[in-house]
Image 1 (tube, helix red, strand yellow):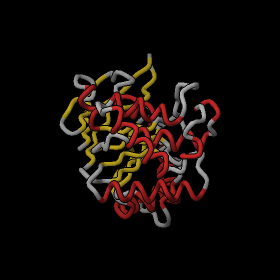
Image 2 (cartoon, one colour):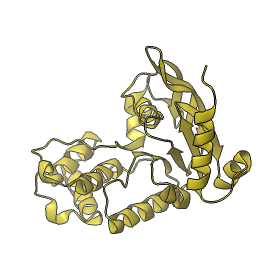
Image 3 (cartoon, helix red, strand yellow):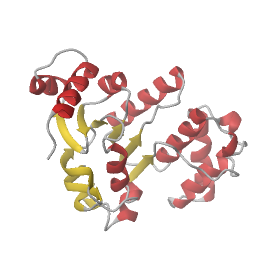
Image 4 (cartoon, one colour):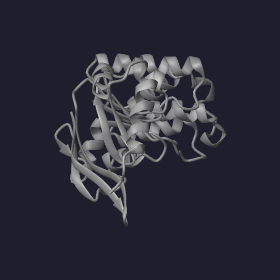
Length: 246
């Protein structure tokens, strides 16, 4: 469902993302992990056509993200690390706008928006302006926007950062239910305990380079490590940091 073919991003002499080759299967929850500055958000922004790659390609559902961006966006629900909305639109109006942009009629857009506001516990804030929303409320509204057109792929950058424990669990359960319906989920997160419970496979990126990928058991075996995903992650990134750079 998602295929990276030598995807890279260079700024001057700095390799933000080194050639990335990776495949994510349909219905898989794939965790994209790495320290701050490792290249996670840069990779996601190239997937969404926000950044132009220096080399390589990424395909989603067989479509090139940079030559067929409109078709890709019809299939993808995207949550950035920091959702940004028109401050003086109400929560209800934002969902209405996003749904209509995806081609739904005013009536169906309103129905979909109302349903998601209720599901994400935002119905009491439906008539509040987005500028007054807390970070957690903005995250929930952003997730509602990502889901409003029933996408076949979700690309999520830190989806539960800023959520309280109840909302965090609700979001994780929703993602697992979506994956069970065949939705492919590509999620970047620093929360390794969440990734361990949620993801079928993970990839670890460090200094722009993919240094490990597979199930937790496969990565444990490759790294000759044991313990939790956090333990394995720290061992792999410590070893990668110790390797001499060219």
